[in-house]
Image (tube, rainbow over all chains, first blue to last red; front, side, top):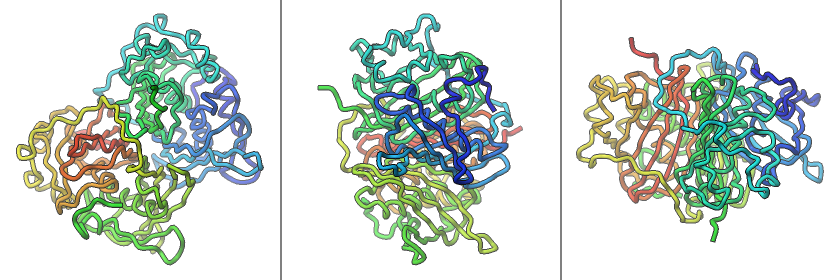
Length: 283
Length: 283
């Protein structure tokens, strides 16, 4: 099911699950501190964990063609439980839900997120493509800005970034030096730091991997995701991914963040949109 | 909760629900034949019915800020049942799920769709807007193309269209006379035919009201929705809505359809994206 070339990659370890002896369709896992960002575990990683559980429940339909995640409470490092429900088994498409839980100080279960998805087999889809979408224009990787140049304050809050080889377009990182372009766009090249190649589950992480696009609007601070839906459109080729995050409308304290992920073969492999709470405006 | 100016509008009747004596959080309703399109009930109307049930379950949070719907089987005219589950009650945001059922020939329940949503109060959101989005440029209403000019074959399959006062941009209706613009775009002016003014629930219908954008790609035929997520961004002002449907990537037999709805005050009041199955290509 995976094109990973690295055995026991950080990502595969992070989303690893074992069946919960307490019941069918239930799994146990662990969230690592290395995936924290702004005080919680990255929402894309959490989605990948839930998606990994659903993959196991839907044999023959390994890939989330569309997956929607609603975030309910802030996750932290430690044990987790995923409960799945298969809603419909179809020939080419199956639907299922998943809930990811952790345990509160009192030992009570707390639901972190709820997922609803449609799974199929990307490898079995017809190949024809009719697209007017164009990949983000990026300078060569070596001319882009690596994480090592990120403000120390940012890295302290984002152990997550150490898992990535993220090279941001210099034209969209002005915010890092107090000069946001205010275009509502952040884009760059993405790889997992340990060289693990992209697959449908890792693309769920990538869809939420870049800094909040509100940074580019001059709004530092984290932007909690209310809802994230990812459409997987094709199996990704190995190599660098081109990723763009863009927003066009911040209103009522909310903004949408549209993400596109393009693979090294020049295919649009994933599209996502999330609705998030905007950080407070700076005075 | 509604800004409707028409009492007992067709839309309000179509989404009307009564509590199901069989259990808390359950409702009963009826799907009318007048909302059929291409052999099923319009997906946007079905979503509005489920959303209406959730609104009743979440006092103080009347509006779906984000709502995701996965379509499971084809709905038809007749009785329906909605079952809701409140997932989380928050101060400004609550989450809930809904399932819409009908009954099969054997009397067994068949789930038509599953919804997952985050509800809040649009009227309570801060007013500031920072947007780079621009409303679709449309000729004046009187210069756009009304439904009365639609091909008879289309109208026969789409009783739904009689519920609308839909005026399409002449530049995006070439498909109706065999000359699709192949831009992946259909846009126009929208009102409910009986004059009922827009509100958050009717915007869910509008998000799926235009003909499939694949018509403009030279692909006639209906495009079954796999998943539809709508973000409501502001309360709509009364009057004409400007609606655009666009797609940028048709691949593997699937395409995304992005919809924007702008109100008469020039505000982007809703954004939606659906993943749908493309009609077979014409030879």
